[in-house]
Amino acid sequence: MAVRRRVLEYTIFNNGGYLSQACSSAETLVTLYLRALNLGPSIADPIPADFRGSPGPNIPAITGEGNNGDFNDPSLDRLIFSPVHYALVLYSLLVEIGRLDIAAFRRYNKNGSTVELIGAEHSPGHAVTAGSLSQALSQAAGIAYARRLKGHTGRVVVYMSDGEFQGEFLVTLI
Image (cartoon, rainbow, N blue to C red; front, side):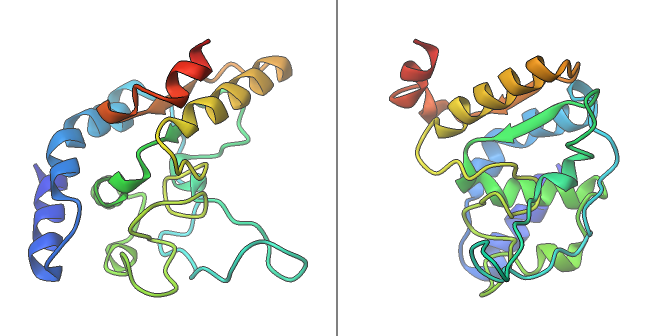
């Protein structure tokens, strides 16, 4: 309930937000984080730095995956979060379980913040930029294959919304 309440309060206070996504996904995300996934402690700064721009010679690449533990640890699971428009509920959950500071949550959808309306690879809890529906599934397949080749024992789990079981989803399965 705390995850939904935080999203509801945000939505009311800011006159908008993806409330229905929180109502439909809070329990499954809580179950993944607290019972199903083998994630290590967060290695990310609880208040992420602002977005400096696309990676390049003077701007290092950053990832939001550190909120889900050490993604280089071969024994830990990796979560690939596909419905990036559900970012608000993911951030709310990360706050509730101590992987993101409330001050970062308050920067949601503010100019320059990595705590974005539509999550990307640099947003807390996100490993990839998923964009189009089901795009994360093919990325996760590549990550899982590479981990298998390296002998990693941790699983790769993709969280998808019900609307993603079309298009690229079918192509990836084929």
